[in-house]
Image (cartoon, rainbow, N blue to C red; front, side, top):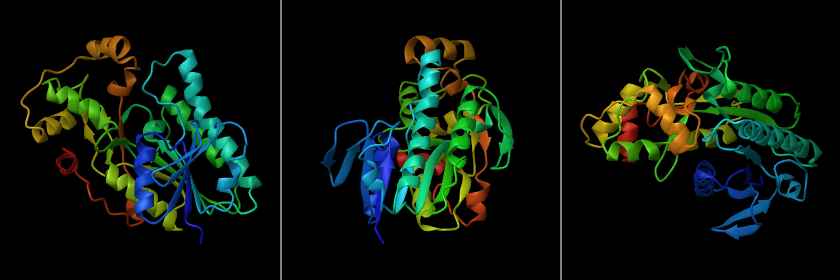
Length: 302
């Protein structure tokens, strides 16, 4: 069996982490990137535009698996231009990869799509994979994303959608801004503090990607979060405890909105909204988390 995995959009924090993990697991890795074609640290980077078929189809033909991580970052102001790019970057990449797989003489056995728990909208109600979809821009993006992924039949390829939560890892990712705030005694409750943070340790996420590749029972949609989500207030308390920092003043919602627009240049909903997500299907299929509790996860990373 060819052990090549093709990562579309694999140049970011998650993609770089997954590339290293797959290589350590014995896979060859090819990354589809909008950058220049090159070989770097044992990884072949191949240029694509995320929208149209090109010579990059050759690296997918005959590969073992395809993983799509493509998508414009949501850490931006949700103006008309950015909203359009957020949707288009996700839907266009799914559509062209589907077209590619259908045109392959030897299509990959597995197509794993990275999705988001934002499909549930801003909710404190526990959501497993069968929970109703939410409302709002982010939820609408996810609905279109998933509809595109499952909207075309790939008869020779197993399809897996991983709805990923807030990834806590070392050296980047979502934990970095929380660490910076806490280090300067600004790691207090954000907004009401009642919005849930459905998080996952990077190591557990990497292990689930690997299991989705190697376990043929994995098919369809999975929530990829730790089984113990917490409200923002508890998240920040736990982070301060692990970092050995004392009380920090809360940041009321109006100040969060002002800082998001003027300083961070991002939409305040990223900080003020949350989802209470339960990874029911992966637990039912026997996946065991190394870091099911927030405190143990943070102690490992800090």
